Length: 220
Length: 92
Image 1: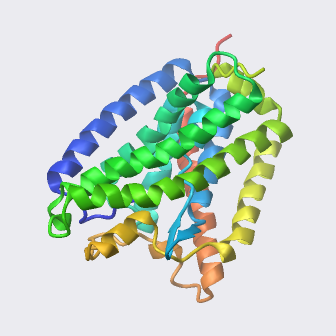
Image 2: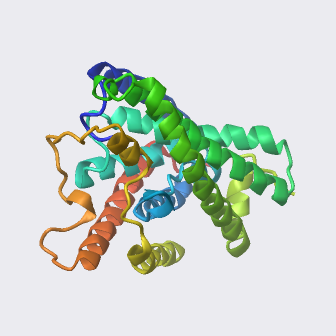
């Protein structure tokens, strides 16, 4: 879902940079106010994990593949604010060193993956209620991670759809349904990987449960 | 620290094992662009390790793996710095 340079209209680039940086500024302030230094190793390791996981494309259908985005994974583990910073760093390294995602489209990629990813935190909260059973917690993560990919793809479809390079192909009326079509399937992969990761982490490293409790996940 | 080293080793080992099974097919957005007859424009920036490879290494598996390991360490260093800058040592 990494948009390369040249796909987006300059106005879309500027607007998405603007919106993303407002969110990042907010995230930075929140992390600065609330996060202890002791969270840094978890922050660094989970970001490195997401970078590695994004290199592993899984086949979907009709010669198309997808890969884990990891936004819901990071948001569940780190909380929404730290997850925005974490995913933004992954996207930054990908853009600068690997040209995976453009420089001008960086703002849009932050919006579609880091900001929407962080939104999954609130969706999990909404679906799981105040003190969910482990089953309900995991089911909520499944739904939220699927939704994070589909919502990111919807935004991406809108961004490319209003950009002139996709105009001759039909613009929004083509790009939005096409992006949704593929990512409804890719999202299932995302959801399956995210839920098995979180449930395995909780099982093999119970200390993760304490971390989750700090974020307000009171799992029974 | 020791736990972090273990996790890091597991991430790299996982990448090394799963990389041969990774799909080369275009991803969702690339397929949408291809179907719309939109060519990816030649950007100004090609990155230091284009397409997750290190040009000096010929074997494609090791080229991608080495670039992936380099990327993992870059992400680690950057998040560590941002993490230290954005958090506080707990006072109480």
